[in-house]
Amino acid sequence: MRFIAAALACALAAPAGATTPPPADAPPAEPGRAGLAAAQQHIDAAAGHFRAGAYEAALTELRAAEQITAAANDPALAQVRFNIARCYEELNRPQEALAAYEAYDKLPDDPHRKARALRAVQALEQRTFGALSVSCTQPGAVVRIPGLVEAAQPCPFSRERVPPGRYTAEATLAGQPPQSREVVVEAGAGATVSFAFAAPTFTASGVVEPPPEPIDPWPWVAFGAGAAALAAGGVLTASAIDRRDEAETLSPGGERDDVVDTFEQRRTLSYVAWGVAGAAVATGVWLLFRGDGDATTPPAASRAPLGVGFTW
Image (cartoon, rainbow, N blue to C red; front, side):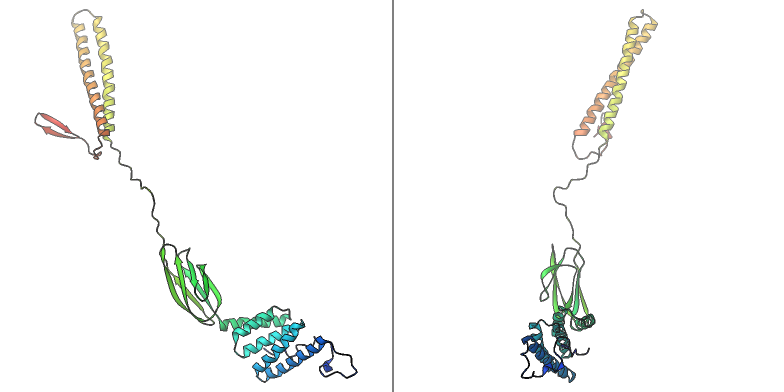
């Protein structure tokens, strides 16, 4: 990239000979014109030093020209700063070259020169800086990198233009121990570091309801048997009453005796049914409220000394 030598060729209103002392009978020169003439002299000297490879001397001349053109608010200030950045590039001082290009970029200038400056900045950044990216396996983690990022940043995190060097990345996640990793960032390269956190586990708080207890069918079996016996007792009782009423209308004799026998049989069976119904209902109530923790054990029959006994 060449040196922009004719920085003030369009800025000076005087002809080329204006850099020589004016004749004695000429009107006094304007202060701004004299200053810009001096700035042109510094730029010309800087161009000679640059072509000779004396970049420090060229930089000194350009710094002097920069002060004059900045004070005069002259458009040539952009070209001066562009050449300052070029000197820093040749001196292999990339950070100062980047700063000079940033100062140049704030000023309006020819679009082609702006594009050249942008390419130069990109090449300098690639040579000078690296990149760093941090990832975490669980959301909610935060990252700090002392010397680069002091305030906690959400993970994942990435940063361009990282000065080369060794860094310690620190990551934290609520409920888990903090972690740290060392990472080396090299110029022109990208570095990555990853933190693996365990997946969070959640525990239920409050009272845990026990599973429902199985329903004991035996009380309901007893209730059903009692209901069936109760119905049978009602039917038999009604039938016995009918036979009794019929017997009262008959004359003594064989037919009346048969009706009376039927009445007595059905009355006896109704008593048995009522008794079975009462026993079944009582058994169902006892099974329902016994609360002995063995609700699923059915009643068992066993032989007793005086007959058959039932064990509940």
